[in-house]
Amino acid sequence: MKEHLDIKAEREKEIFSKIEVEIWNSISGHLQCFFVRLSLVEHLSPELLGVLLGENSELQEEFKQHCSFISFNKYIDAYLIQHLFLDFLCTKQHLLSDSEKQETYRAAACWSEQNGFLADALNYYEKLGDAQSIDAVEEKIKNRMIDSHVL
Image (tube, rainbow, N blue to C red; front, side, top):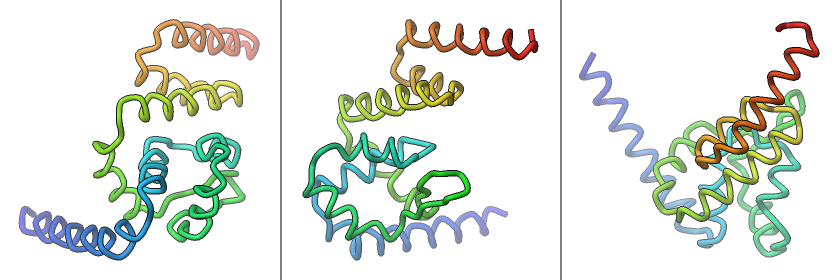
């Protein structure tokens, strides 16, 4: 079993090395940061992706040119990051500043709350340490359960 895990880890290391050389090193620092920020978010709706991209037209254009590892799934109305690329991006999360992480979590939390994904909103608010927002979302969940006659 340990040998199997060692082989898997070695293969992953080789793949990540190729991603680093062939993709990562060929894109701008702004796009690198954006991709890593995407790895912090679980449900990448088109609207949330737009919020995270912002008004930076250069970043938007570069994203369009280098998004081959991100596809849109019309059945769940969300973008999905290819698994190996997502795993690679997760290894780069240490490159983000605390404020970049907080900005990403805040945007994801607000979008999730506004669109009824309350469990996701709770998760992001917890990562932010935002007790007041957690309380507000828990109250919304309680009210939703009362309205649905679950409580």
